[in-house]
Length: 431
Ligand SMILES: [Zn+2]
Image: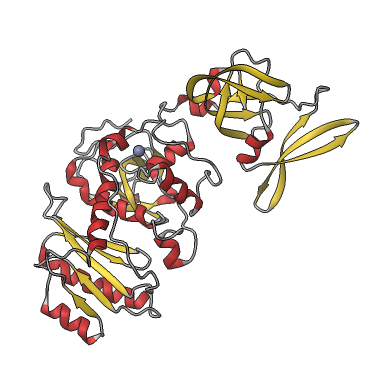
């Protein structure tokens, strides 16, 4: 793609280059970047490697760019004129999106325009992939590519994700100092789902998140499926752990839990041990200074913190909201393929590619319906909330900005504004 006007670019890096086109080799390229444009028939195209040349006689669009956006091309002859049809599949049927007549020179032509809505939005959000980078919790470009290939509900399938070092993300550079810790590699990868579980606890954490000071993780060594719960005291750990084991045994009766490894010296309970023995589950407490056994739970905690930290960077939430960020990070980890599997934990456990269409940027503004008792006929129908993740695909969690209380509501009933990040504590003015 060669464009002769800067206005189509959402990201443009000026650098001279030469390029071969259908009409010969030219030296007129002044820069390259990402362009969003609209064709005459309303087809939106995002071109990730568009070239900029102010001296170009025309804007040139290649077949490859059209194909990369998921459209197909067909040539037809009508009344001695050759046309190219740009087609796409909508709910199983082929639709013709554009009809491009042929020039005598062998090129086909159409008219293009800017996508206006993209232009008004904050410059940071000019691109799908940038948007999704934030929604998915700031993965690096390699991880991002893996996630989009192994999930659906986003428009990025088959697109090349640009290197994030080129497009600076403030949250990534502030929030991610450490390089991802490499977890202890498991020698034997043939273990079954739920055969080996590992658990660990993190805390006390200051400031408290509501009543919570700890979080506990339980992770499956085979699929990396995990469960995280927030705790107010250490004493509650075993009650939660038991509840989780019972839930796993009910949901996955075909899989047997054989061994649980629990880190932390204080992390023992006779009742829990007795319960596990009665079910034939081995409980292992590794010696404090031998860290080879429980490396997985420990590195999982680090991984959660690593994802949760940049989530905070672009929000206006205070540090006491760490619990919400940790729980959201857990959901995000479930859709990330691990270094051991091509597929995400969610897909390994449930068999389907995860749907991510309901994902929104952590901490963004959400307008939620006002419940009928408080809603008057003439008054507002929605109020401001702060999005802090989801419980199910159809249920979101939000904080009431003045009180900080947590509520849930239906995803379908909400309006999101992912360019606004409200503050807690009544500092917001209702727009
Ligand atoms: Zn980022």
